[in-house]
Length: 194
Image 1 (cartoon, rainbow, N blue to C red):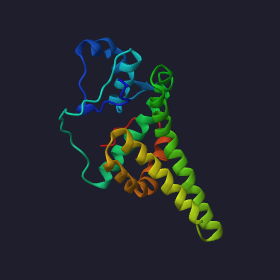
Image 2 (cartoon, helix red, strand yellow):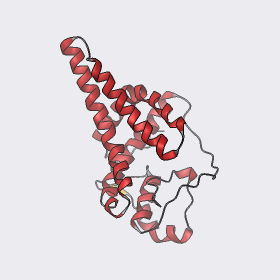
Image 3 (cartoon, one colour):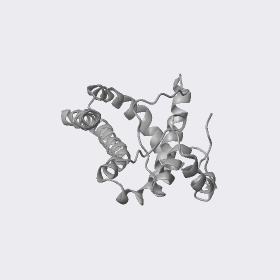
Image 4 (cartoon, rainbow, N blue to C red):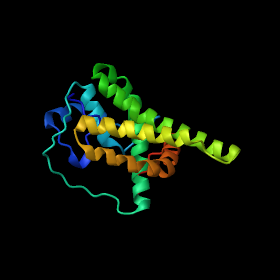
């Protein structure tokens, strides 16, 4: 589609002339009137797309980066990423109609998917507290939602290994969903957390 929605910082390259055109906007990233200095890779990607440039995935590119190796740093990273995703999704919504319909579906899905998963999880918890059990169809619904999302990714990438992301669902429900809820409630916080 010529529109990768987030060119990850350590793995991205930009044409100098394109960056020069957007440098002032990029350096003056604000949210609710406060400077924001994380999620800059997603922000720059969206600025590039808004300016009419293409962003593309290069499958044979090689890049190195540092990743968290324990739970605390991982959760801080995920909190930063969740805040930047929510912030820049608001910016991207105005851009999406100009891009491909699949991208609109993907961006909306990235934000509605966790919301639906959270609502399903809360409904299951409420059912457990009220009735002392969770209906079998609740687990089936969560599994189906997970498999649909993973199957779409596997089909789009033509890689069966994407089905393995289904194993991420318990981590998502018990760790990342509460973290994303906290991120949504603290969007104005620009702390880097490291």
